[in-house]
Length: 504
Image 1 (cartoon, rainbow, N blue to C red):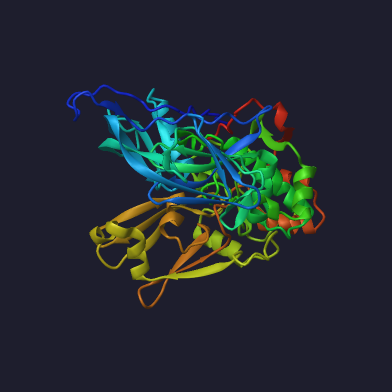
Image 2 (image 1 turned 90 degrees about the horizontal axis):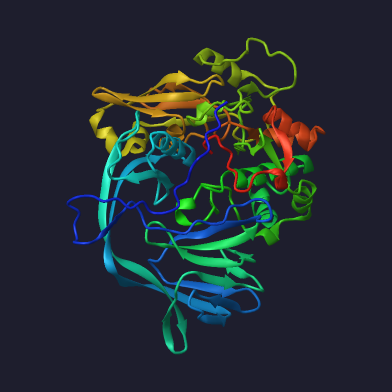
């Protein structure tokens, strides 16, 4: 199994380029941001972005109880129940020339990181960024790695956003780092967060509100929102182990912006930890410090809502190196199913799967589903690419993976076709809950997609885990079922800052 260790470039890459605009201007691939501290060992605090890309509008921070306490890098201190902040544009002493070669956009961080790894294998310093979509940046002199197309981006950054706080004597400039203590909690996004917090600039010239949250407290804000607080105890415990493992293995995800993780579906959904109930707290306590590992490193701990009756190979969702613990398998009791055997790489075999019953997690509302996509919906999904295809557009399955999931789908017209691969299929056709489907034509020119499952299908099926837990399975049995060969390991036995190593 491949174990590529991602090497994240944490500083802007300066390059000397002839003919750049602005005499004496420094040329960078992006704005430099200090790296967050690695998580592991005694340092078990995640830097989580509660609000990225700030700076266009004023920001008001509200204390829940006792006053907020703000401090900046120059020693300025201010406190209050309510802090009013804003940004002003200030001219840089010297303009910066931003020039870079860009790959993307990509449908996921996983796909972007594989592109970055391909570049790094050629000795190119490449970083994964998320200005709006996932991209990979390298110096402007770099050529695209094989199989990728690139574009050159260049702009001049003459101004920077300076953070200010409102005081009785007027607005005061703040110097980074800007830290915020909230002894009684900070009200944010309908909840209350304990902090401490940072306000810091990012690689794009905007700012981020970051919470420095202890790992176990972070899980209180993740587990109930990922699997549901009412899930059986063993399912909650399995989710706690996976959420902890995923966070550690993905702590490099936003390194270019100076924090570890986001708080939305690009990472794990993170909300007010104080709202976690007793069952969630017990699940986290019962698995305290436990991570799922492979060869001494956190696994690529992916999970999803429902697998539709069959787990996916990791390569059906993302172009990743082989991971021995993420293999396709039918998710049913240990008995043979008539006329059903892996691989399910033909339409008729997927039809047979969709007609079968008796799978774990079959109570999920998206275990079986249908969607009808009109010609208008297909053209809208393709955007500007649709005009070159002509009308009508026909979806054609080009390739299935071993679990029956579509890994290459052509949207074909009289004048050409667009081929979508792996995670780009659902990113473009957002109405589809999964890529486990068959397609039938409709009389009005549209197409019916009949499928199963919700999500990418790799790793733990949350619906399956809930079902297994209700049948009396233990947390260890559930994890062994969905990640065969992976081992439970205490966090303090892992190398500090160790990522999963498989392109996570």
